[in-house]
Image 1 (cartoon, rainbow, N blue to C red):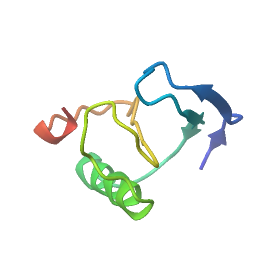
Image 2: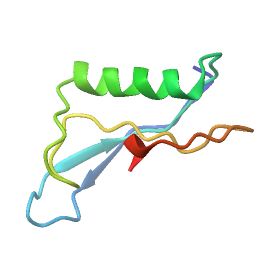
Image 3: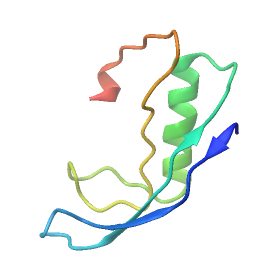
Length: 79
């Protein structure tokens, strides 16, 4: 872990669910291949109770990988 932002509390913009979200940004450094890193992040989501049922539905955790410097990774599981 290289850096962490503050944690922000936001109200969902989806009025159907109307719940709170807590958001943070982390800067990480890893030697893992992008595919393995992606798999590990999905495993963490599952470990913390994430069940992928509806697009933009409620979730206990959501990990987004925004930027991997110098790397490109394409996968149908990212859609």
